[in-house]
Length: 70
Image (cartoon, rainbow, N blue to C red):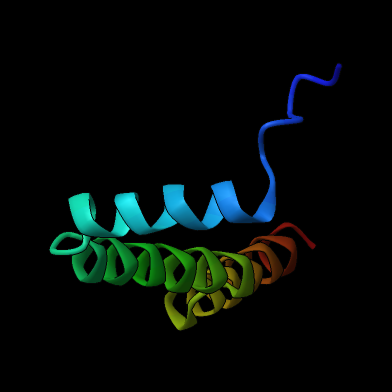
């Protein structure tokens, strides 16, 4: 007999309904926090304009240093 044999669709619906009754008032705040976390994660992957400006500044400093050495 499988470990998850008791997880029939009917059982899952009953468990989901009980969870909704117990935690229903907290779900909007949890989902909001989850959405903000995903948004921040995506911003981190893309990079921010401040990061781009810092990279350009760093690159221009390297070019200036190379020009001074030459």
